[in-house]
Every structure is written in C-alpha cells, then in structure tokens.
Image 1 (tube, rainbow, N blue to C red):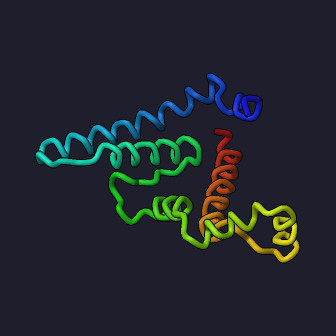
Image 2 (cartoon, rainbow, N blue to C red):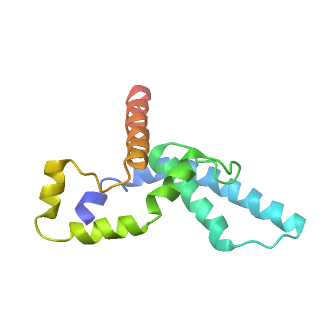
Length: 137
C-alpha cells in the first residue's frame, strides 16, 4: 500500500493541494461563523463531514462539491449513494464471497457495484485527467 500511495503524496503535490484545502477551510470558517452568529446548534460530525468531502473532492478530483452552499449537489448525492448499503448490497456481498461466484458474475456480466454512481465518479476522474493534461497542471 505504501508504495502505491507514496507517489501521490510528494511534497510538491502536497503543496499543490494546499490551495484547495485553504479554500475549503475558508468555507468551513464561514459555515461555523454563520451558525455562531445565529446561535444555532449544529452537529460537528456533519460540518466536518462537509469539510472532508469538499477537501477530498477539490484536491483529488479538482471539483468543488459545494457541500456547504448547495444542498442538492450531484457530487454529494452520488457520494452518499456510494456509501449507502442496502439489504440487497449485503446479500450480494455475502454471495460474492463464495468461492467461484465472482467468476460466474464476471461471465454473466453481473455488476455488484452501483453502476450509476461508479460511472459518475469514473467520468469525473477522466474529465479531471483530461483537463490537467490540457492545462499542464
């Protein structure tokens, strides 16, 4: 694992990500200030979840997920759907752990991942790669 992730987190790349994280930190500060001025109670888990989502989406994908400003963000909806586990998902996971079943699923072209959400994130990664190659960023 270390050899796979080491090239991603070089000092130069970390410096490049810092500007995105600073921007997201500004959004976090505005959100907390806004709630403090209103005297509103809020869940830290929710606010820092938004911070994490925005930080990862901007640094890794080059996308502003707008979790602080846009309640209907498609990025947020797809990310939430990826991590939502239904009874069917649990059943598929259990069946897939039986030896030989993954090969049968491959032959029958049964996709156990969430196809719409997976396609959404795949498209974002491809768009980001294309944009970064074009801009040499």
